[in-house]
Length: 419
Image 1 (tube, helix red, strand yellow):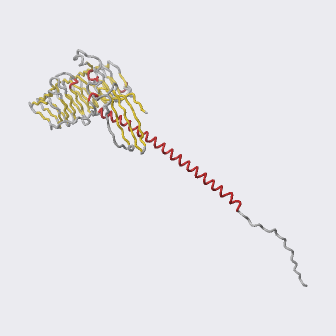
Image 2: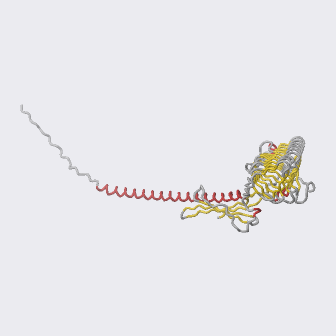
Image 3: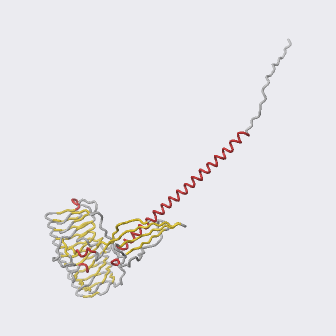
């Protein structure tokens, strides 16, 4: 049988149109361009803000640096004045500048200078400057300055004061008369310490004055009074520590070492610097003029030897080593404590005044243990790292030393920034 193939008709499909992207690209490309422009604008704005913020931050940093430089100028001024590098007794014409220092610092390219004015009250203006081309950033500080005698206590020990039995501390005023004619009850003790028993008084000690301890201390812990000892004045807590700056010896003519032995005698009439100073037993050294002596090393006056300050001579000793003074080893004929000043330098760590000594003078040795042996009779003022006094001594503070006529330190008040 013959087969017949039958073909079904194919459906007619609609004609496909080609797809075109031209209309979409005409919209997207401008949008991308606008977006990129907006991002650029935002980025530039952020960059500008960042740069501006950095400039403002750096300006504030430089302002702070200039301020710290000005503050450093004030510190430098007080350091120089308190270490002896200053006009004696503030001898400066009113309005004359006292330039402390100008130089490059670790804070940047900056400097500072200080103007000191010898008015009443004296004051100083310190200028700090940071130079960042093309700008200069300047800050100024003004402070009033005042002088305080380091000898405003009978006894002051930075780390403490210890008095053995039967010691008497009182005061008088050599400007008004001798002791006991002007005897008074301003024989104050003081310390910067707040440690237990920083001020220690053994039995029968009488202090005709106040006892002051360091800031933040408790007088019940820091002051120990044993037996029948008594503080006639008040027990006080200081509002701030007493400044005890280290002093610097002046430049003086080198005169080698000084040694007198046996019955040797010598008269000194000129200032000078000595590598060491030793008066052996029975030696006599007389100082008959106003002099300043710098003893670089040890100072030793043996028993029965004497250093005699004759007439009205004023003597200042700067000592770098240990000191030992035998009985009556220093004779101040004027009996004016203000005429003999003893200054212990940074390397002076021990001063010993032997028993039975009669001493008129002012001792300032911030790093030294000052030991006063028994039966001493002392007129003046003593300042050291530690004050230790044996039994039966009499310590008579000369109030004339506290009025700024001797060694003084510079304090600051009324601090303000100038714009």
